[in-house]
Image 1 (cartoon, rainbow, N blue to C red):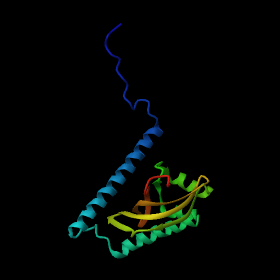
Image 2: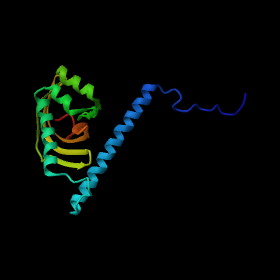
Image 3: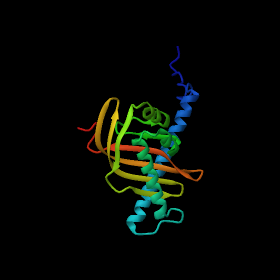
Length: 188
């Protein structure tokens, strides 16, 4: 018997192709969120300082309103249970983090909507919808009142939303949405 320790195989040695793909997908999402956060903070600093943003980052009033209108169409489609309209707005790699904190893929979200497991009764902003655009990336933030029926339970609460849109083939599509319940979740 030798006292030489047995070398440990690399952590990725037994990794499957699907695990590698999930890892790459997670990296892509994290990079997208980081880019969105940097863009949002950078533009917020420009606005706060009173300076003009650099070329390519200026949001026209019309572009900001177009994004607000698109987000409103998405909210209306959710309340109307119009999954085909929702599908047209969500990017193929869309992900959602709802108030409970469990990330959902586009397909999981659409399946919940189609089956009625998730039913939006009301989804209305209670604050102005802030829009920040940098090139082909846009971040919308606002507070809303939500009423949903989920898993047989009806919930009514306030939430903050961060919606990230990317311009793909000339049109804006939502790639990320996160809702944070105000006052904790589930609501009291």
